[in-house]
Image (cartoon, rainbow, N blue to C red; front, side, top):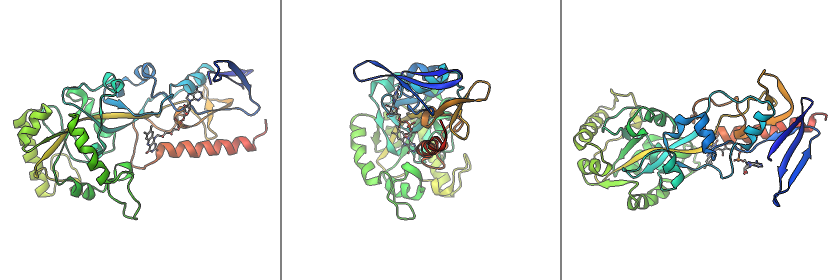
Length: 337
Ligand SMILES: Cc1cc2nc3c(=O)[nH]c(=O)nc-3n(C[C@H](O)[C@H](O)[C@H](O)COP(=O)(O)OP(=O)(O)OC[C@H]3O[C@@H](n4cnc5c(N)ncnc54)[C@H](O)[C@@H]3O)c2cc1C
């Protein structure tokens, strides 16, 4: 699809380019359903609409070919886009301590896939200080990183980590142990464990026998990190996070060498803002009225997410995509041309 066509206020169809490079016009009887997957591979569009999010990522894991074609085509025929722009980001990108967070690193492909980043480990800023309750959504800490030096945080854990990830009871894809109803996790801890040597070898994960050496490897101030770890271990012993209010079951000491640490930032999965729709997935124009015959689903559609991805319920994005896609199909099958 290259362009949508609207005639006399109603959708007439679209113009597409085929595999031979020829343009083909498709005329519609009932309407057009747009589903081209958002714009997470279109850096100029992301820079124009949500530059703050590009400052906290170091990797792009989104689908190839999602360049915002559908959203732009809808705008050209008069549709309205969400005014709060957002993308789904996970806090699971690890960089070498001398790498810069941002688009250039994401584009370079020289970045680490650090699945354990979403666990509620001790996380500190470039000064070696704690600054956040680590038990949040995947994206929560990334937005706090917007206000930190280098737009990143540093994740610190110890050799007892397989025990603690069970205690943390993460949900969704970050869970590393079977769920309480017996369902297997997306990725078990044994698989994650096998990724660690590769990350260490490439410099994306630092391993050290002392906290001082870990700090040096991460280019953090050693004395500050030692103080932070000592205070954190004290809070764990008390069973009460007096500093940031993290739940007791998400507190774990950092006392069993060797210690591990990563310079941590986000990676993009998809954009989540799009064309505003009504309850029939009918696109809305800039006056708030439905555009006859124009329907939008999936990442191209808006009116659903704002500012952040709230992964307190999992599958929110795939869920709305397949559900609303099915509903619009049923609706159009019933409707008269
Ligand atoms: C790695 C990864 C993990 C994810 N994990 C989760 C998760 O755990 N839970 C969750 O809820 N969501 C998750 N998501 C998000 C979820 O997958 C998306 O929200 C959902 O797939 C969007 O579906 P879609 O149909 O809008 O887009 P897509 O599935 O991307 O499909 C869009 C299609 O349109 C095609 N296209 C693009 N431009 C054109 C054009 N001009 N003409 C014709 N076709 C075009 C594209 O090639 C693509 O095939 C994840 C996404 C990624 C990338």
